[in-house]
Length: 143
Image 1 (tube, rainbow, N blue to C red):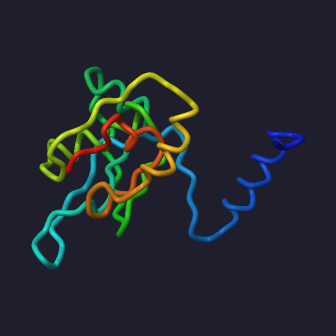
Image 2: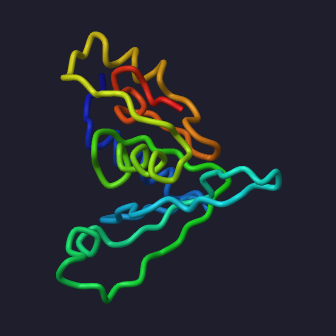
């Protein structure tokens, strides 16, 4: 519980954004995962492909924007449900062959959801750590 949520949030953001290795990307959607082979020949997530959210939502009407590629040794998805990065990443792992199948997400039950999110946070595929609702599909991500 905080006295002023906006003051707390803005203070935390200002301190974190002042760090030299932190970038805030606003109105940005993850459109794809970068999957590469590691030094042992195994596939792993090596980054993300991003674009402006409005461009990502309107690919049928425009294709003039180039996506941005961000490579990283580890990608953390801390969103949930089927959004710009959440369950999309899980579904992409299945189509890329890094996971066998997905579990099934059920309706919200906060008493069970909070511990499931904490206990479900893990590396779901080499290079991709998921937390939030994404890895908490009922039955978990199967791989």
